[in-house]
Image 1 (spheres, rainbow, N blue to C red):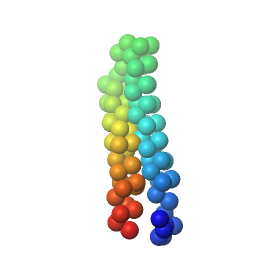
Image 2: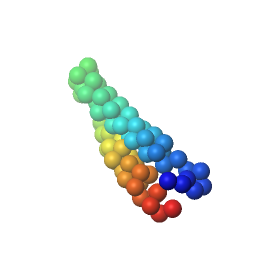
Image 3: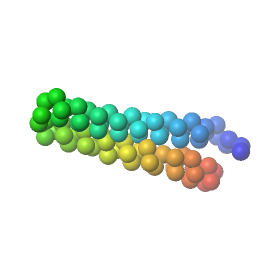
Length: 75
């Protein structure tokens, strides 16, 4: 497959997936550990960690489709 414009879609796909995975793991892991160690966390921390996990899941799920399938086909 020719790379027009110098874009490396496989690298973008892998990087996006692992960034999303890292956000998801940090968000859920910190929430679980925080509740285990401190009991109840402040509401802003719960919101932040939940949003982190949600955004990580969305990025990790969408990145292979966008950079692995859609972008190479539209070029």
